[in-house]
Amino acid sequence: MPLLVVGSVALDSVETPSQRRDNILGGSAVYFSYAASFFTSVRLVGVVGDDWPPAHTEMLRARNIDTAGLQVIAGAKTFRWRGKYLENMNDRETLDVQLNVMHDFTPVLPESFKRCRYLFLANGCPSVQMKVLDQMPGAELVMADTMDLWINNDRQQLLELLRRVDGLVLNDSEAKLLTGDENLVRAGHRVQELGPRFVIIKKGEHGAMFFSKHETYVLPAYPTKQVVDPTGAGDSFAGGMMGYLAEQASFDPKTLKEAMAYGILVASFTVEDFSLDRLQQISREDLRHRMGEYQRMLAF
Amino acid sequence: MPLLVVGSVALDSVETPSQRRDNILGGSAVYFSYAASFFTSVRLVGVVGDDWPPAHTEMLRARNIDTAGLQVIAGAKTFRWRGKYLENMNDRETLDVQLNVMHDFTPVLPESFKRCRYLFLANGCPSVQMKVLDQMPGAELVMADTMDLWINNDRQQLLELLRRVDGLVLNDSEAKLLTGDENLVRAGHRVQELGPRFVIIKKGEHGAMFFSKHETYVLPAYPTKQVVDPTGAGDSFAGGMMGYLAEQASFDPKTLKEAMAYGILVASFTVEDFSLDRLQQISREDLRHRMGEYQRMLAF
Image (cartoon, rainbow over all chains, first blue to last red; front, side, top):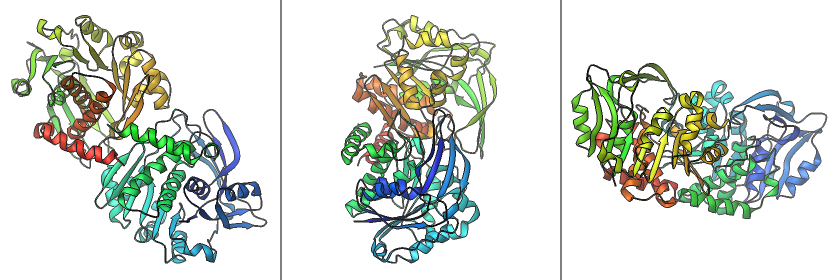
């Protein structure tokens, strides 16, 4: 089943304690799409400027990612993010953000995209996320991401969004911020009570937690020695997870748990190099192999 | 198979954001012993002053914990620790430490204890830990804990100890400090290369990681809403783990993984109340029940 994602398409500049890359391919919709493309066809909605290298679009298309929804704005520049990871490779500082074309991005979905039944609203302004939802009344599974900016500055709109989505993905500090609860298990359930049928709290190197009315579980991250660049891990997680759900055309509890594990594993590859570099080296078979290792790790 | 532990016996005063308790039963050897006593008989070596309530000793004895190695020093005071947990219930400040009888504690093992084949050296000065080892040349499985104080101030002795133990248990920040590596997977393997056959990195609410020459795995913590007092979680983990190993009289890879899971589950009960209050309410059956939930959580 095809999967639709609306989110950012970016040129990132990333510094880590040992390396630096400038103007590399990034953005939530890009990481999500590529991660999902191991499992299903993807339709991407986003916006770039005319500084965008067409080769990136070609590369995505070759992955069965439909870029008909990628607007190119003449005379404008692509969204740019510059950040720096600290020694622990978990905390980061944003050094510069140039919204450029994202500043007044109002996603308009191609007609053919509106029939998609699985939708991911990558991190963005909740009112824009809802405008996308309005265009897809037939969506069966809607998942969304959010961030501290919207929790702090746009809480009412975010709460409205939460009543309209099936699943929410957010990180641990965001869950604490949204609920005011420092205990992640309680925080997860409280977010779930705000509307979504299920909530996933991402914990970076510590894995992810799942909450629904009747279920609570935690899966650890896949232990990797090789953390080169954590950028895009969260979006890769969401893409791997939702890609698997779309492939299975199901989101029953059993499939959701398998999907979460696949999300964790795709993300574990993403962080092993900059941008999509590592993901571009692997196949579905590599994911299957790592899944075997992961399941053995958790079996006793 | 009986299990021997050498460590601290303490009266703790604990503040959390919502509650406070003074002079409650604590200490590494106490948490370890009680946790292990769900699985096997325990022999405790420690020291207290004459301010020590004999009722505590009685309570431990009733759990099949042999206190023949608990010295009571007349005219002296028991080790006291006072600490305060921050809002997140993970970070804590030590407000006061009174070493008292621990100041010049030199463990002398009763003859009957020396034949014990499973030994846990709770956190302590490495030279003292080695003096205990010297008294037990026939030990088959020796595990030890350590802390930042010894890593910073007593590194040479600690490195000597590491060449003499089978397993080391330490927390994430200590593993990073000992190796200078911020990646926990690399840090775990580096510690293992310093001597122990296996290393366990405790990550608090995020679970624990296991490292041997041929294995690397992570198990998450059991997700609990009810974190009242994290004091003793690490020692309960070690006690539950080693208690299970002693019960099974084995430390093959399969048993080690089961044991680590039991350690995680005993610790998950410990944090649900102050001191041993929660552990005193549960039975082996409760542990078995939670193990079932935990295994279902990790199966997919």
